[in-house]
Length: 219
Image 1 (tube, helix red, strand yellow):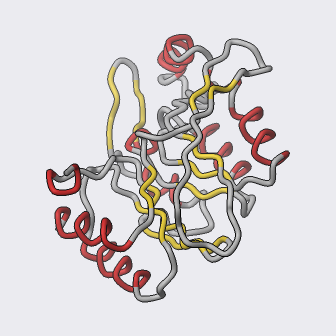
Image 2 (tube, rainbow, N blue to C red):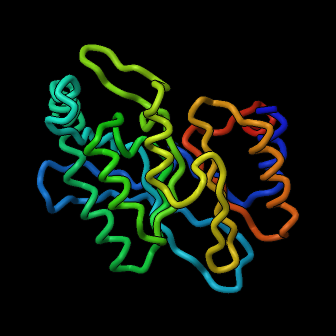
């Protein structure tokens, strides 16, 4: 199914955004200095569109409600050079330029109560389109991570107004499709929904966390 989906995606889309392409930024201060890679995609639209694409900030947002995760949060934030300082500058950069923000997963490093609150506050705006990464489904209980823990996936998905497994967002005649492939596979439901979107006849951009690859695709 994964290979069939990728073959179909290559024929039906004008672009695929994953962790390979993203706006890179590292900063220890609030006034983050961004190093943005500009990518032009010919989609055949009547008017050009601009988006800001980010991925893999790995913000470890945690407080005393998750005491077993606090030590790891401190260590991860130090290792990743305080990525939480980047979120507001990224949002401000996009808003100032009227650019929808496209996120392809691992914005948070693991699930916490404070992290769920962050999602509810941050994704309330319609200008965000998000696809989940594997770290959104982690819970870090010192000293090791637990993946796909009961309740973590449900709590994460409940923070969003749209279906994280598969959702379509039409912007300026472009169909932006968010697909959860954090487990490196696709479900029959996702495949069927994608085929329906292709029938709409609009140019498609796929957002997914795990880059799509087959030898045929590479060639």
